[in-house]
Image (cartoon, rainbow over all chains, first blue to last red; front, side, top):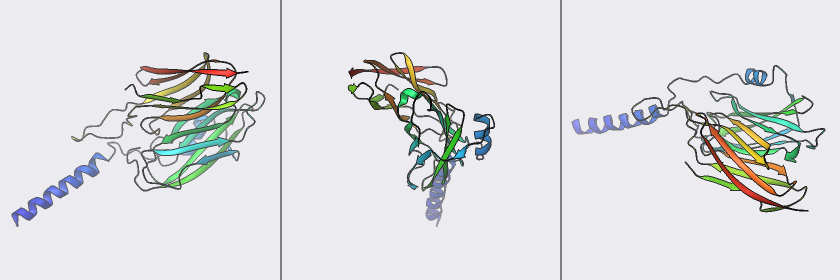
Length: 149
Length: 107
């Protein structure tokens, strides 16, 4: 009996340690994406369109999710993308990255790898040189969340 | 932490849009994790990445903890003239890492 209990205690302890190491020390509540977008773009509101976000529909590992953002733009000196910002709705910090490009880019396509704290929408907002904002999003189900982003 | 990998074409035709890929080894520690003793692990991330084409900045990124460890970026630029492409990273303490490659542009 004593032997059995000890084994159980050990297992419990190990399980607790594993889950504990995964918990954030400050429970970071998801930031409001709309507020984050408003603060980055000085209150302007993006209109849907021109931006294509690609992430796998199911992500086995939230610690590294391949992300691709494409913006429809001729990328000429007169009409080009100046900034692409990526937001994750369920992450403690909504803004994931902000990319600055210009007419020399030729193509407004970027790729990276991001962390996802939960199954969620990933939104991208593109700012054009005329000041207009466009946005697109994609959803991914995360099986192993980056529990601490 | 010196692992930098760049994928860029060695030659390109003038006016061609080329894809550049850059990756650096970095833990991108979020600051939300604890170690095995329960102590918080401080945040340690790269904050900035840029690519310079013959000294002119053609791409830059501001990074946050939501970028995965060993940050990878793929982006494009138009081949205008032969020269040097410099890829540069700066972390939150101001420490820098960079790598450069040569690009030959055929007229």
